[in-house]
Image 1 (cartoon, chains in turn brown, red):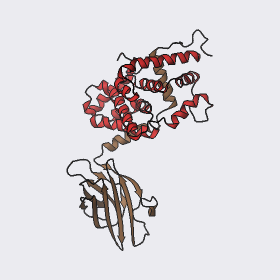
Image 2: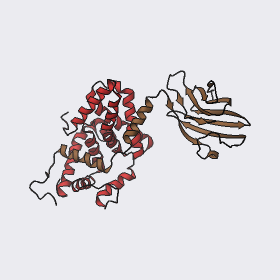
Image 3: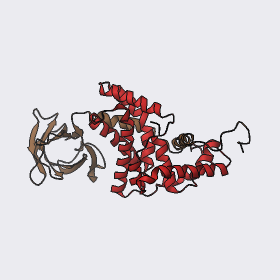
Image 4: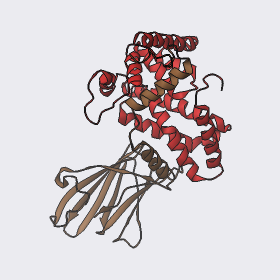
Length: 168
Length: 193
């Protein structure tokens, strides 16, 4: 026992001393993750952006997690999908290649009246489309290259939602 | 300020000054405020028995709420209290929404730590802290959570804690006192503090 010394710690510590000690012991037993602060700072930095970055959550099985939407030596005909997620929306994008042409279509859950733009290396001007009443949109023919989709809500003035770049 | 005059008034003071500088347009001051108060918010949120990953999300959400609505805080000295209250309410909302109010496994594991030889890389408490930890573990679970929150926050919003712990509002102050008394008795039995 350590408290036999006359100069030992008080046996009846006051509230403040105890609470300070409790805070310290919890800080040791359950410390914050080392990246807690960095995560917060990154979230704040993203908040300051002019747009909301959607997160890629799924690619279809055939691609096994590869980010490229189009396999480099892929077949002349085929379909593949990407799925993105934002705070209030989930967006599915499907690519269908028919010989040298790629069709891009997709749908938005829940249905929102958004306008859609496709910007890409292969496009001189952004392609534009609208989400229809069923949440669907379509670009019948898109050029190959690094591209990204932007979803704009014209009515509510919320931030545009933008996918990370993907390959067509 | 006289409720709990721990060393934490300096935290309130420091956070008030950083908040003022951030509101005046100094972005780096917000980063410093995040560094200063995130560990405290972590303790507050974890006391709600959220798993670590969810707790991290709640701390992030709390800061984003400040960034979005910081204008509503007119008194800079209130910012630390505002953040802890926001964190606790968000933790409560999330745990209710997800039904995640069960004690997390890692908390149960952590609870046993001081009694067992600590494997390499695990928490090793010194004698005083190990004794305090052991004594805390003998308190009723609600006492443990209440003391953790009160200790982390230094200036708690008792009505909100009462809702969270399912205690009548008026009983929190006295409950805190009783929990501390129980802890003192355990400590005395364990050989003092």
